Image (cartoon, rainbow, N blue to C red; front, side):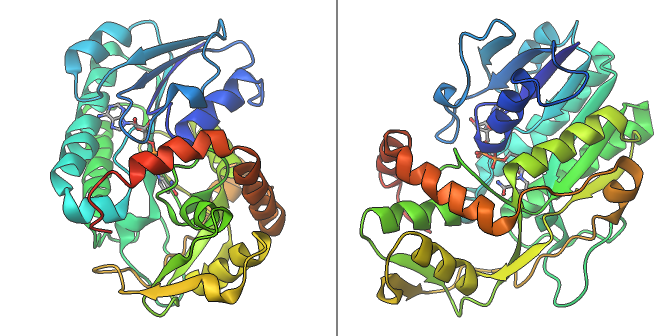
Amino acid sequence: MRVLVTGGAGFIGSHYVRSMLSGAYHGYEDAQVTVVDKLTYAGNTGNLPIGDPRLTFVKGDVCDVGLLRELLPGHDAVVHFAAESHVDRSLVSPGEFAVTNVLGTQSVVDSCQLAGIERVVHVSTDEVYGSIDDGSWVEGTPLHPNSPYAASKAASDHFALAYHRSHKLPVMVTRCSNNYGPYQFPEKVIPLFVTNLLQGRKVPLFGDGQNVREWLHVDDHCRGVQLVLDGGTPGEIYHIGGGVELTNADLTRRLVELCGAGPDSIERVADRKGHDRRYSLDDSKIRVDLGYQPLVDFDTGLAETVRWYRDNQDWWQPRREDLFRFPRGW
Ligand SMILES: NC(=O)c1ccc[n+]([C@@H]2O[C@H](COP(=O)([O-])OP(=O)(O)OC[C@H]3O[C@@H](n4cnc5c(N)ncnc54)[C@H](O)[C@@H]3O)[C@@H](O)[C@H]2O)c1
């Protein structure tokens, strides 16, 4: 079995690769893994067990059709994680999101089609649906993306599914809620807040803090992706949810407490433009069809995540320095 993983040096992709190489996925204990990653600011080979004889790392861009056509033959499956992934960046440099997320995905599915890849998973997000005040989205809910990031992911989903309908490419699309866990780049809310607090700084809470997000541990997400890779039906969309909904204010209070800081470390800042109020996925399809259920208890997972950042300052300190070198439109 040979699996090619795009974006495998980022937060979620690297967790997936580490899990596969450590034998966590039944039937893939001997799989050879090829990672293709451009190593943008968000990707780092330090997230991967470089030197593992079952891992091949290739620095490359998913928009590079020539590279993909050269690499793909001989692979049985592709899991496509590579993307520009941060909403706030998409508000200031949307072009990069259109190129990587839309053109990059079209290039991946087209190259998979030409190479005759048997199983392809395109990893997407709940943000393609927009915002929902009550209830939860099902897989057939019409898309209504609000941010340039969400728009680019919605377009990428359409490309992936169109390649199934036009060419019978055996591709499945997964849409998950907000992930948390170790190795997440410290621009996203949990690692940004935790690393701020560990450095004795304040944390910037957007608007009234009442935006609601559904939290999913990265290990549960990756298990869900693997279930879809293994048993999903081509052309289908699968939600992967965490089931834990929290307002940003509640999440912030928990992080402040876990880091041993006080309520005065919370600073209210102007709301994000077009900030979606609430996300909520109905993930009964993957639970019923593929036997998925999240296993990581949120309180335990969050406490372990905070501990990981506390114990791994060498990992995040240089990344924070990189982060604050960017012009901060967010
Ligand atoms: N993090 C979340 O909470 C979340 C939630 C829902 C969906 N997703 C989706 O999951 C996927 C992975 O997200 P993440 O949080 O790990 O992102 P990330 O930003 O941590 O990692 C993205 C990776 O893709 C690589 N990359 C970027 N552009 C590339 C290109 N042109 N060619 C090759 N590699 C490129 C980066 O170097 C990086 O290693 C994305 O598709 C994202 O949309 C993430």
